[in-house]
Amino acid sequence: MGLNKLEEEFFSSAATLEEKITKAIDQLVNSNNSYFCTYLIREKEIKSPEFAKAALKANIFYPSILYQDAAPETRDQLIYLLDQEQINQSDVNNGLLALAMIGDEKVVEYFKKWEENPPAWRKDLFTGPYGYAMEGNWCIEDGQKKSLIYNTCYAIEQVDTCLPNENIFGGASKDICPYCGSNYINMLVIDGKDERLAFLGLHGKIKIKYCDSCLPWEEFLYCKYEEDQESTVIHHTNGCGELCEEEMINKQKPFIISKKPVSNCYCDPFDKCAIGGAPSFVDDAKFASCPNCGKRMKHLAQLGEEWTTCGTEYIQICTDCKIAAVTYQQT
Image 1: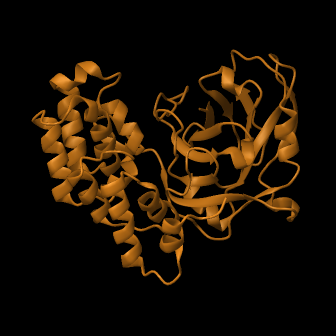
Image 2: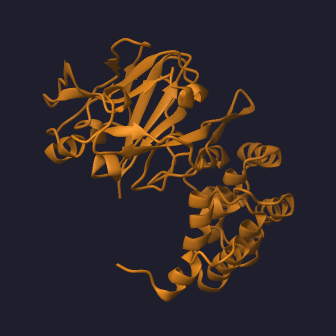
Image 3: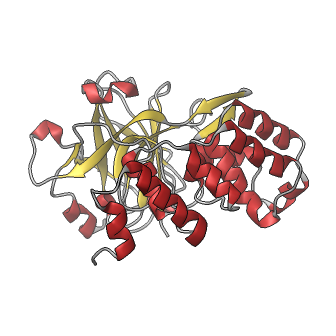
């Protein structure tokens, strides 16, 4: 499908960045079309407080990524609306999501306040402010804000050929799943000695192993890894299904890590794959608690439909306990 006239004008090389930002905001405010703003944020790494300013002025609170670079004035206006209960109940959910995306010290202060002394709007929500914090990729742990992401991101790309040590898909292991009879899969093989991945703080290769067929049947699957050794699947207590042949065919071509880093919010909820950066959840944000220490685990990788062919997988890690968790979401 070709580009329409609006898209042709927007993506024209003749248009300056300032013109693109202006056009994107115009589409957001006048047509409630956030596509161009989110494109600039995700693909071009544009950090502009004007997106949030314009969105709030137009009473647009979604998608929350519009607010990630909000100016203090915009943040304070949004806090006021929620704290003074001056916001429509229908907008409370997205207003909290927007604040979670900002996630600075003042937001943390008010999330603590609203968690301990719930405003009237809390009764109509499924979770409190601390639940919303995870939508901004952070949590409150031991009374302090804890980031749940790495601030470096590399895309995962499928190629026709590569050197053997470049392919990060590990393939089938010898271990058999007791629930469906499929081989466990070494889904990712991550080399901590790769200079690009130094931000992970690993010192050797780790294998993220789980049963891809049973993943949709468990909230999380876990594996215990040791650097430069095999991993062990743990806490796998349920499952059903057969190995997806289409998915294995999809992985006959290797996957590699991009040469250069990409935007921290590179992933959308459905297609793209990356190591590091911020996850983009299909449904509500879901971060596992480490089954060993109980602390929230950190986002490690997202595998979208470029990898899975159906649904999106999210891999999280506790480097203290050397445990990885995997969860799955789809529409």
